[in-house]
Length: 217
Image 1 (cartoon, rainbow, N blue to C red):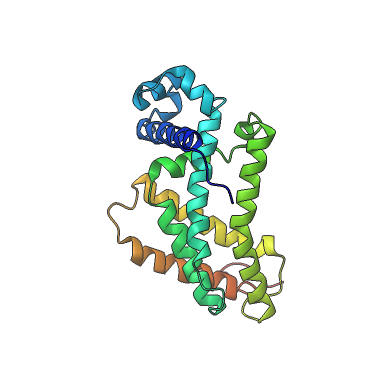
Image 2: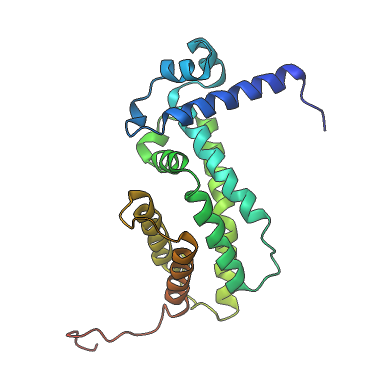
């Protein structure tokens, strides 16, 4: 494995400084209106230097989104794969929850980069890199659910059906926290409640529920 040259290390460092500068500007509610010129000023570089590192502002968004995703991957990678399914599920939830709540700016850039309209503007190389990272993030959860089904913990239903409610609950909870609707909360306590709620939905996914006023089939 070759060691990067001093020039390449300096280039990478400057690229990270530009991303850091952009993230500072993205703290504003009008973050989508931030210009490349403003990012250059914040990073204390010329506008041309920005384009040596990133082809467009969209590429800056994409790189920040992937930085965010790599933080989740790093957290997933240290979870012991030998742990029981339920405990691994709890740790996966904790990793994703804490990363999503660690930076409002990165979280909303990540959501912005999930839009199909945005992705259609990316270069094939950048889009491919983003999709590859997303696949890496999804894989541990997919394998975990499949293992839970195999062990009889979760019902034998298609993965997409099992994950629909879980993903909806998780994303809804994150949005509620960042919206400020819940006020000042104990994040650990809310994570525990959310995890138990999602696990109950997965484990009892096949259990019939008699709803008042609904005739039995």
